[in-house]
Amino acid sequence: MQQHLRSRNWFGRSGKDGFIYRAWMKNQGIPADMFEGKPVIGICNTWSELTPCNAHFRDLAEAVKKGVLEAGGFPVEFPVMSLGETLIKPTAMLYRNLVSMDVEESIRANPIDGVVLLCGCDKTTPSLVMGACSVNIPTLVISGGPMLKGHWKGKDIGTSDVWRFDVAHKLGQINSEEFIEAEACMARTQGHCAVMGTASTMAVMVEALGLSLPNNASIPAADARRKVLSQLSGRRIVEMVKEDLTLSKILTRKAFENAIMVNAAIGGSTNFVIHLLAIAGRIGIDLNIDDFDKYSQKIPLLANIQPSGENYMEDLYYAGGLPALINEMKSIIHHDVITVNGKSMGDNCKNAEVYNRSIIGTMQQPFKPESGIVVVKGNLAPNGAVIKPSAASPALLKHTGKAVVFENIEDYHTRIDDPDLEIDATSIMVLKNVGPKGYPGMAEVGNMALPKKLLEQGITDMVRISDGRMSGTGFGTVVLHVSPEAATGGTFALIQNGDIISLDAYKRTLHVEIAEEELAKRKADWKQNEKVHTRGYVHLYQTHVEQAHLGADIDFLKGGSGSEVARDSH
Ligand code: FES
Image (cartoon, rainbow, N blue to C red; front, top):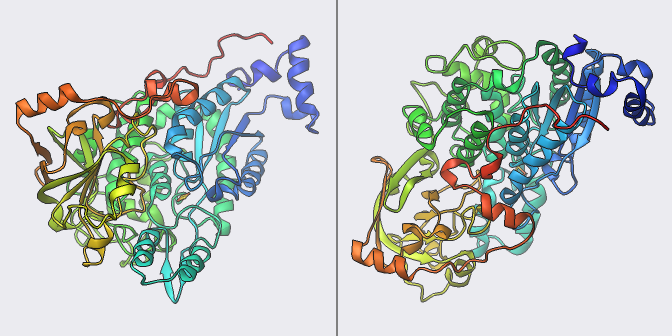
């Protein structure tokens, strides 16, 4: 076994180099026998007090270490940049690719034979998985788990209520004291957002891809079984190293198809599209935006979880968890794909039972017939845009209206509540320059709040279109990820107030009526008004980030460089 361990290139050395590699580890109180051919397991930790969703990860890391030691491995914990969705400005997505570089280089550069990724808040999952894919050693993911649901004034609440509270506060239905009181009532335990937002969607994604032990997605962060899962994961990664069960053996094309189908059944976040495309790009699987529509079709909503349904992630766990939901999909899912525990997806799920039919439906009796991701294309978005029908108003999925255009997010904030703004419930709100290059970083502002004057009329949804993203906890008839984005000067950049836009999600179309000559004139007059950064990471990002339909990765980060170290002397 020893010759297969890459860590032996450090700790198995004789002479000065071996002395240095071991001696400076021994200053941490590590006995000599820990260096004797044991698999070295890296624990890649995104713990940070600035990432509140991951603030309990030191405890999880200790549980992983116990498991690694029990199985005869040597655990080493290391930090990487952590992305907390709530605090990082201008948007955590700007740094997803930066973190993936941190993770990739940290794994490759160090004596690590296998790695456990501790992921939680939204971007901490794709960034870590992307980086690990570019190295491709045995890898296992543990998610931090969802918060327990909140309670306020006798009602269960979660992150999707933030948008509702905001509207109620604007309309004077709740006062400022009540608004602040609700904060602590909602986020009352450790863990990530309790609904099927992006973090939960990412936790489901890694389980559906086969990258985590069963039930990783839904065990609450505060539940003792989250620590048990972590300890068992620690044991298992040591075995994975011995089996040389690398990421590329798990992340096959079929595994990606499974993930798309499961995402449809859970009503997962639209951010899933952009992250899964980026992960596929790193591991070398040919996946494109149309696959999301293709493999989502005919899959109904099976999980009755907010924002597409009514309940919370902990309810999913009590109802049987993701294995039980996947078992309901047994007629369509790929059973034979291998997962991190060495068993197939089919074997992992075949005995999982549903305990509560109000939380997990059947293919014959789902909660909604339409789910998944719909990809619309047309002259407004030649490379595609996405919409999540389960979170939209069915009546608006086919709609024609006049554009009310905001050139950027500041323009939106300045004018949205202007009483003189010409807008009504049939208008289509258009927000430009919030895409990957334009913002830069593709902000989560696509579900623009409606104008106060329309909220006061009782309007709750309108068609909204942007080149940005939407929080996975958000909802509404929101068309996102328009590609090419406005900052590249495509048709989307040229839309003006009053243009007639037609959305038909059933026919997968998105068109704007502008005569060819008029379009050519606007194109000739178009100028890039958004800031172009000339230094630092943001310059690198803005220069090299790809469009949303490709996953918004940095162009030169696609693919991988393996686990070989370029130069091998100290
Ligand atoms: Fe971290 Fe929602 S803010 S998961």
